[in-house]
Image (cartoon, rainbow, N blue to C red; front, side, top):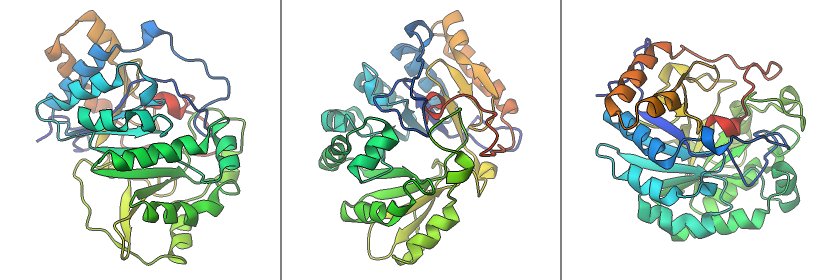
Length: 330
């Protein structure tokens, strides 16, 4: 049983571990066009990341997701994945990526122990994809997804942030793409993290219920029997007659905080206890003041659980969280 239990009797079993704040895209809802990245001295080393991962697993975390930024731009990512996969007690190591480098990294990731992968893709139209990512090439991602399919991950899921008036007309096309390629898909509501200039978040807000209604007009959707005790916030259904599961991540319209079982670690070592609040603990300070001291690290993590808030309160017109999603760790 997890030893990480917060004040609301929620058991933390899932760590989202950011390995870099850098990215090879500049998605409009995720980053500013001109980002300022952390200097190397403020970034956790691979050894520090592995030590923190070990501490969490010894405290009952079953699942670790490697995130960014874009995790595949971090030098040494394959060796880090291999080290984390070998930690006794870890049930599953997974990753979220933009897919640009999957053509190169899919097979090494599988060999290192990454069992499932999520690929963020918000449009299947090359010109729109380039606008949303500011300079990305859709073909790189499609080639990466195909490489991932050939590499025998246990499961591949695509993630799409749906914005009204921008890409909501692709909900059906993205779902068909998932079905045709035997992928799962999750639709994500945009969250108000960081100041952006590309669009008004209140004007582009699209909730999960609206997306679900669009899908029901085109597909027969049934309840899914899929259950993962360490799963994230996605609620899954399934397209009848296929293996494709559909997830809805609804931080704006359907608060899932009561069942929250996850925390996030930024690459600078901030343990974020809630995505939508600034409650955090500086683990970098601890690992550098007490190098290799696993007990000291575990004590600090355990003590931090009393600071995990009950819920977040997102408002698309109120940017109280100034950190960007790219700096949050997925």
